[in-house]
Image (tube, rainbow over all chains, first blue to last red; front, side, top):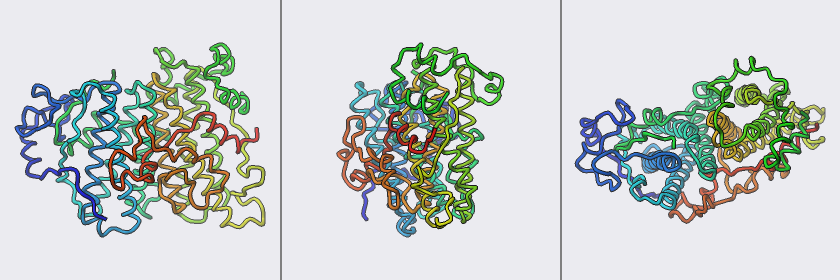
Length: 243
Length: 276
């Protein structure tokens, strides 16, 4: 199956150069890929205002933008996966799972785009559709790298939605986030199970992520962007999630 | 309180009922063991009663009691499954044991959370996983083969997990304004989804739901768990129209979103297995 890459992958060189200009973001995440807009001369992000970081916003708008950022990241990752050589030679089972994840994440990404365009009247408050990512740390030819990154992204996605539910004000959006997060959790379980194989049959909901109350992770935006921030080249902040 | 009475009242839109009757129903200020609740409840659930809330505490209690009912069901099911001798592989035993652990933890957690609301947890129902003799998942009858019992054990687990995912999702919006309870409910919700994915894969299915397909080998009686999953309209948008290619096929578009069950629908499914 032939699929067109729809997301530009930043090269390692570009990522490193950008990191040289790293300043502490509004979220103060050392070592993440969050950069200040003003330190980059080639950002064509129309949403940047006055050279400052784009802030995701608060309440419903903030969560829509936040989820859109994460879904763009996941969709970009799986777009690379299904165009990579590991996928090309993977087992039938792994191919089917990775293709499904690609399908779902691209669908989610486009839904958030449509939802934001329809429900955020101020165009300047909408996250760009063209976030750039740095996947230089991922080897798309290698099973461990592909599945290991997928695991981080899916678990992080679940924890992000779980942690951000409380910022949503409108019941419809909370229900929609719920419709998506459970699919992310289904993904996470499948990927974990693939990685662990017969070495650990409990990995799908392992003791490393489910606590002694039987609860999954719920992460703050700071924690999420610390886990996934290294992939984001386009700068943004999420200063005040709570409306 | 009696489980049937609770379920009955839940299904008759008791959330819209006058506050006074709901208070009576949940025995507010009844026998509360605050000390025990405080010990078991993390991150301030116990103090939430003092905060301004969009939802009344009775609404929250009703949601938690519905959740507790479903967790009682799952907890007993997995315990009986592990004791039945029907699970003969290391893989199925490990998976069921891990899920059983979580369901037991959920029962304990929800019980404490309800007590922390100053309310009384609904009593554990009496379950019948044979549904009046239609199934024999624990191989209680001498003429039931292990293969048959195992198939039923897996099918029921899938139905319970996929129901759990949809039921929690359906109640989330009722918890807006009560951040700690909402977050905890979401944390249980995604664990149920992980369980569902794994049980489905153990049965040879994909971890996600395509259309309203209950999947190969699932009894027709479980179709109610999957009805509505064929929806492709999310927030007023037909997601099949958002682009081209495989991500926007009807199959992908239904897989990518799990649907809700209303409280009524969840109760109807659970009631199949509740004797009293």
